[in-house]
Amino acid sequence: MFRQSPIYQLVLSLILAYCLSWITFSNEKVFWYFYTFSIFFLMAAFFYFSKMEEDNNSIRLILLGIMFGVLSYAGMLGAYLLLDMGPSYFTNSIQKFLNHYGPTAIWHYLLLIFIIAPGEEVFWRGLIQQQLKKYMQPKFAVILSSLLFGLSFIFTGFWIGILGGFFVGIIFGILYEWKRSITAIVLAHITLLVLLFLILPFP
Image (cartoon, rainbow, N blue to C red):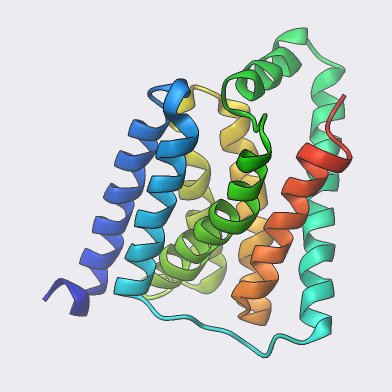
């Protein structure tokens, strides 16, 4: 019954996502274990309630995904530089968040690239955004799914992260609606993470 009722799919998926987010961010000592566990559950929800929509994986789509990842990074860097011009509280809160939850070991980076980035994209763009399109126009579905994605960080108390998630969600959501390629948005997400944490981390 639930599998045939889109509204139940949407509601149950969101309840699952927020419950898992609350559990994940409740204890930083086991954060990476719970985060990975949560992503597997969200991926399972996607494969149970939805199906993969995938355009041809051409070189052009791969390059487009990387370009959107660079664009996302540029936007976040610009926002960081603007915040850095204001009270130190803003940049200090970013550093505090990274101290608690940022990747510090090689296996953290491997999880981000091979499990977390793909899992978040198939759930938030592949499932939630597509379910919302049953009740509203695609542009509003992109906005609302991005807001819901950003709010999944609410249990951290890190409001800048919520805004960052919303911004990234908009960019990746637009890319998915445009090209219907999970591969492209996953590559965009991975590109953002590699730039953000490995190549050009913020000062």
